[in-house]
Image 1 (cartoon, rainbow, N blue to C red):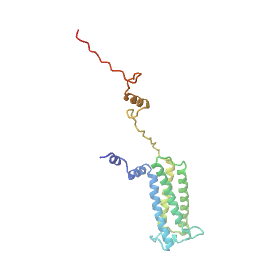
Image 2 (image 1 turned 60 degrees about the vertical axis):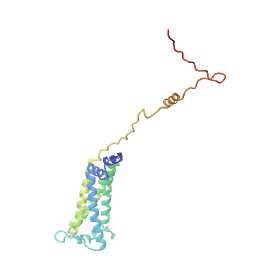
Image 3 (image 1 turned 180 degrees about the horizontal axis):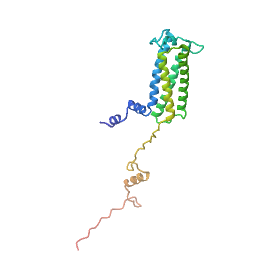
Length: 226
């Protein structure tokens, strides 16, 4: 197996990294899941509103979705805009807050100091509006909408999760240390050592006589027999 294959095998994939981040911040991941469900319900009710049809709902007893979705409380006061459109915006922003927490965690960066406080205030504003709608259904209309009740429950749960996230605070960030490449003295040659090696490799020429001729080499005499 080559070094590249071994590195690809040992390095975690995108799914593993996402799973690790979700395990470290399960509440933020739960907020995203709930926001997606609430967004889907809001889109469905918005489409039915502009089509002029009643949503699929059980009629009878305390529930009458058509009466609720066609009442004056189903639109923004003084406009024909259904309240499901601000509901879609609320769920998108709520999921965005949670996604920002996961994004900072995945990059091992610290969150903005007031990110979770802003999320609590945003979720609290949605909960206050939901309480107004529940009052309108129970007191004014005296009937409930199953789809609307589902949205109200999702809003309450998201607020509670936002409150818990604010109380817990951001998780600890693991500091990353940059690995320094190892260097050996054998591979790094200093200028003085290089110059010494070059000087030793160059042969030294014998001195010349004033006439320009090199002096004859002296023969070594071996001692004779004594």
